[in-house]
Image 1 (cartoon, rainbow, N blue to C red):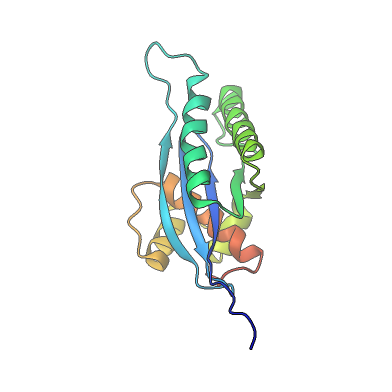
Image 2 (cartoon, rainbow, N blue to C red; image 1 turned 30 degrees about the vertical axis):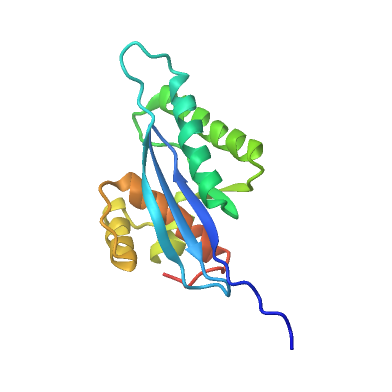
Length: 174
């Protein structure tokens, strides 16, 4: 008689980078499929009065480190931001760059694999349409996971995580 395999779930963290940084934790059953939404929310990285800009990175480090240490994900996946809006400009690009760099640093320090996924690819694998808007994405994922997202940052983080899981063939396609 063979040994019984331990039945463990594998976790994936999805991140929608920004000043309001959406995060999600999805778990995958031991044989693939059976994807569950374990948690989601927003890390508020806003700079308050009399604070320096570096406080954003300290806040991100404190919050993301806790999530990684608690859930021990197989991978952290974050959105690859090419450009945000037509009128956002260089300061927004710098902000995204800082957040993405800090995510990489945290993952390296905690020896956690990380990767990126583009918005269209995440939405294609999460909701079946790479051109789906934020509203449609939120609606589909709310129904799929019976979740009550408070904002697009939360639902986008879930789309990034489930999009990556489905792209890799680890989950049950949305």
